[in-house]
Image (cartoon, rainbow, N blue to C red; front, top):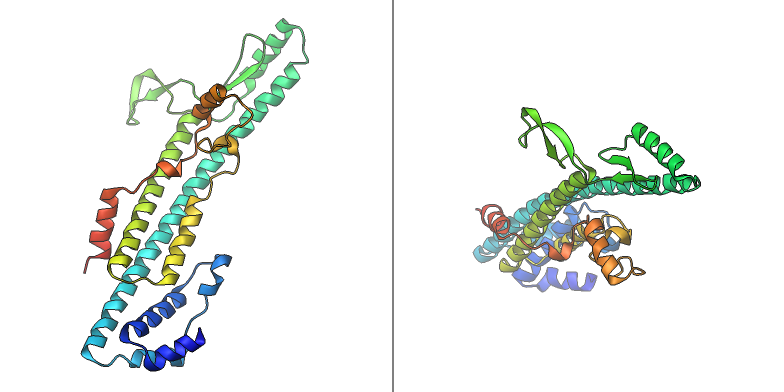
Length: 293
């Protein structure tokens, strides 16, 4: 590598020299911490080498190339800062959804534990009495807890409640039935928010990569940075296959008919394969941000 750099410094073409400058500038800008990209963290050039290389652009055409590539670099660097902020928004949304999923899982386990204790009461009338009394004092966030006919507790996360506000949040005199304030509704709202920000991310990412291609500004370090951000965005929200209903390993021990029904219940994490580039978002970013002089 050092031999190649020395050769470019002494006899490289203008494009070879500007690519070396661009790669070194990219590495000096590098602020990511992914261990697998450690080879991109160290500058390529010493300060003296960078200064000599910068001073080697003397002719009018070379200066035009220098100014053009520096403009590309500033544009891409700013775009990547925005993409990094968007990736952070994705992580926040994923964290919010993960929190609700963990809450849901805790409620399911609470239901299971409670009913395993109720099972020890063999007298069904007595079990119903205990379950009814227990349901009155239990208040699990955004759920409805009620006893069933057999004297066991059900935790419902998709139930109707009364509200004295309309859909816009304004007070009303007569109550209306709604599922807006249930755990299932809240989780799906957060899921949609997560999908929205992921779509924005992949649309901006596509625009940046296309702009780099059309500008012939193919700097490896910047592309590695995009890959690292993409990996963080595409990582599963939660590692439990129970909630990853888009994968083949979802509840493998269940019959297909039963598994398909459960998928509709537990399909609460975004399916990345279904999320595509939004052309409006893509066009706005590439035209108004990247190509805008």
